[in-house]
Length: 203
Image (cartoon, rainbow, N blue to C red; front, side, top):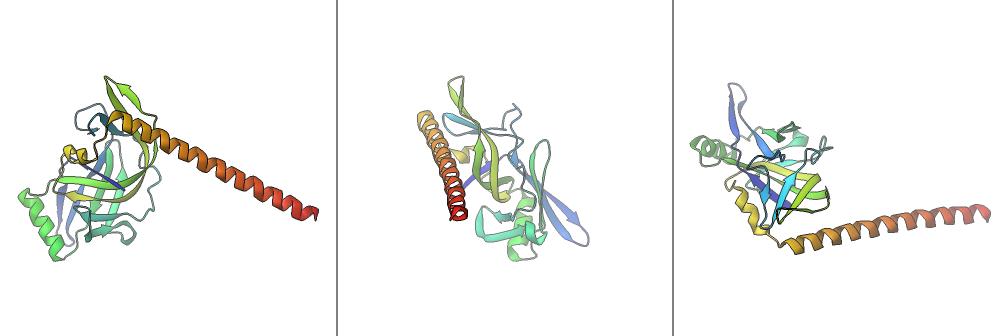
């Protein structure tokens, strides 16, 4: 699983009877403007508007700082709500009435916590291409696991995963080869099953 954090301050919405809710964007789509791509050190990563297609109904959680011991909300319980608009992946969560939830609201109101992030696996991406000597990586579909507020919000946090251009291109080619091999294995299995069925009928 991978994580990415963005410079986008989530908001706290007060409700008289229901307490607070936290709203923000866990990810933003690339639109050509600064801050909508990740600098991975020789590789610029962009998220396409199709990246979160099909996440409706997925079991997604909200953690504070990606820490699974600091659970804030969950889609299956209705305390985390996700939506996708023209800007990116939007989330709204109801923080629990616990020490963690109350502390987070206080930290956000003070301005100590002002970023958002998401945890995911890459399912599909475009072939890498070079642009002004830099490799462009465009992610077109992900498996989303978690989203929520974080303290380290800058894109530079992603540089811990920095890789060389050649290494990234080689990794992409290896992934494509593995996918083709899996597809061939699946087709061979189907053909073998059909052959076995025909032989059984002939017997």
